[in-house]
Length: 356
Image (cartoon, rainbow, N blue to C red; front, side, top):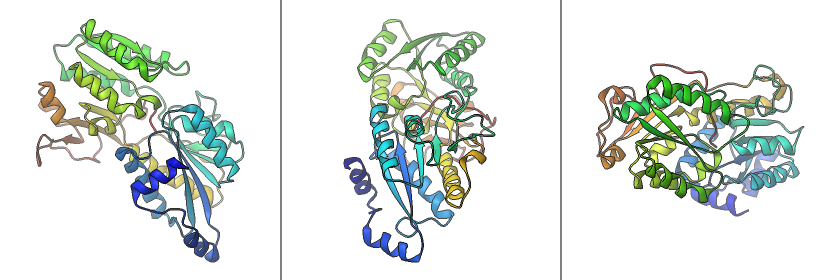
């Protein structure tokens, strides 16, 4: 499997070495975990999330090569590929599947018996994957980015960065399950803030350039990007286009700011995957997914890339710098006063769409 070999080479670890697995088998059962990710396995930000998941497992006594092996598959934003990999993990008879983004739907369609743990996903209730967050009722549980309550806050943060801007472009991929609600929330927030929003919908990678050209023609002064699994894989392209068109942009997850995007405000994904390891631990010890409530994010991050701000000729207001969890500095030692990992001033129990 090319994806898996690439990932293992990138991490410098041989996860599925037969001798170590054999040694572990002699001491007791070796459990097989399927990991179905959305993004590219060599993406540095994605590698950080995977390490958070493995750290969560180690904290609970699960070590690769001793009592677990992990089968990695990466769909790279392609749902058809996610479906193929989900079916492959089912054929391998893994003990549990951990899935992100489109991999969650693919895994749920592939098996009704193997436990599935959501790492990062939007709303499993809206997609009909669980009966309710409190009582999932099937073979799926985990973490959910349910709701859209952060989107008005994100829009407010963006308007503070461009206080004179009144035309804001919103980039998204239409989803009949959640997109109409998200659009209504963003439009309502725009009216309360006295700004105009124009939605630009993309359905495939070739749509990005025409969308950004249209934003420029219509005089967009800032950009708000709604997350989608395809956008995760196309992250560098979106950021480059935003910079080319001189658009200050706000994204949902810190990986965008770390890759050169101006700002990001959303759930701490590394923390979510560490918590996903807790579900795996409980399931491998006998718990049933149907009895484990789906949880929501408890930690959030607001990250500002000061180097990008300088390149765009933007001065970030001190009020925003003081609220940031991390400022990616212009030079060593120059960053915001707030530290990564602290709670934001307002803790929001809900978050809008997906990344994996």
